[in-house]
Image 1 (cartoon, rainbow over the protein chains, first blue to last red):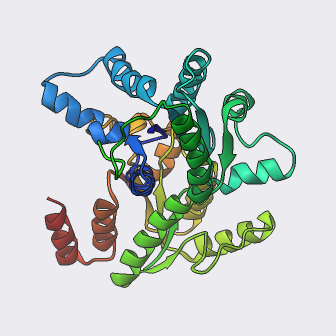
Image 2: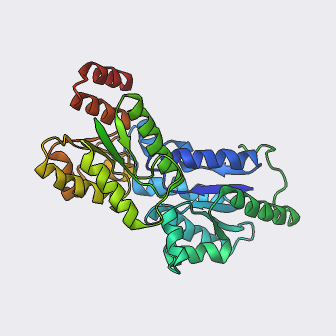
Length: 171
Length: 160
């Protein structure tokens, strides 16, 4: 089962957190598509010898989103990263006509967001939250995310969508 | 030298980053306050955190502020404003050092540097300080402020 790991990747500690989560998910047997593992934009541009256009960056990420069976979205920070929100919207749209796409699971570790939820305010933007809740759920811990993904994986196996998959979740 | 280290404290990995920076500062002999405290975070009452952070800022000689995010965190901006006001009446306060990693603001190669930060915040920092691209560079600057030029050179050399 292929997962697209959406989330803000603009600081070293965000990237380290996403990388640690991807490692755990791979240990659990999932294939993880992680945008910053393709190189951050600077490295990709150096390799290409030129500045990438926004459209080219979009194409790289879209290819991964479109190939995934599910999205694991890191929803932290004062507002959900705009790139992450767009990817959630894209996946929500794609899954309306593709039964191999199971849904979106949110990981929200941000104390401030949970504090908003405790007093009845939406923890994140309501439209983004709706995309997740219509197709999956928001969790505070990766353990709960993995439990949810395991259920989807069983459903996909039952539907014979996942025929051959790497044993350790690596591509 | 007493330093307040301010940054995003609402996610576990951002807190972990601050804790690691604080440990490095203490390892270099700086007295370091971080808003999360050293034990489990107790921020149940905003009033307590305001009072605690204010007292730490009042007695600190320098503020190191992590400026990440599309916009600087409101808590960090509050610390910067408070410390800037304290600087106006206290020449003992050396100044504010910023750390900016966020590639949306500085660009991936840091080509934009601090130029895209909110100008009011940047002005508060640049009155007596600067914005750096990494904690290591900020640490070297703090060592220079503390008169430890050789140690600063050694940190700079390690970054090169």
